[in-house]
Length: 256
Ligand SMILES: C[S@@+](CC[C@H](N)C(=O)[O-])C[C@H]1O[C@@H](n2cnc3c(N)ncnc32)[C@H](O)[C@@H]1O
Image (cartoon, rainbow, N blue to C red; front, side):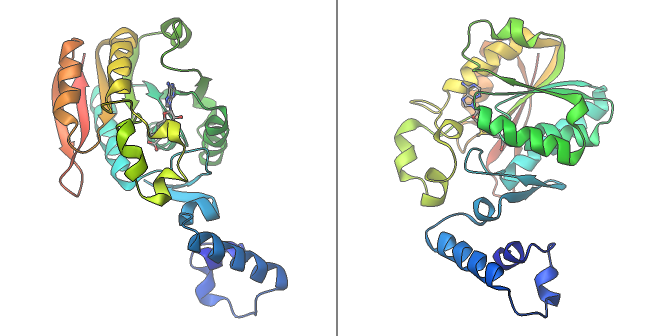
């Protein structure tokens, strides 16, 4: 992958590359190898990561999309197709990988992507354009802790989806170098117990979802029961908890 990126070639192109590298390509390749040796994740070096059906632009300003997050897209698509949902809001859109993947499969749907980070939203906008859903998506730079956020976002959404920061603050230091040094802290730190943002987002979802609307969360390992309890305390019903391929309860589906 690093060689292909240095060649500026499509995926798989290096297998067929017969020419010696140019000086420029060799310099770039050497830089990529040095970055990898210094623990840069491959996707942060080459600036893209495959997620669901598409390649998403990434940078150090966004969390690199994770394979387990694709479950939220699959579950979200099932819900939207079965219930003819067209209004989707994502809290913490980052690279935009979840919302953009949903909109790409649902031609009638429109989305709002919320994030506190303007530099993350720049990447999300680029991804929305590349994947051709930019006309159906509105990005809003704000904090979900902002007082006027409900007025700003409006209401009547069919689906709220979120993969919020969920690592307890005290566990950040023990994360792999590749995560803690290359994914933004705002994408990781979920407060003292890792649940701070679930509490806030659930309270907001109760206000902005239409009656019968759906709230879909990604959960960290061991958080599912607490997230369901937060949902129930805010008037939601537990619909399903879906495990990822490692057997971790990863996707929480709640209904208003
Ligand atoms: C775990 S990342 C998820 C990114 C992307 N949705 C994904 O699944 O790969 C969480 C995102 O929430 C954003 N975020 C953190 N705190 C926020 C806040 N108070 N208000 C709005 N967005 C916030 C971060 O900037 C980050 O992009």
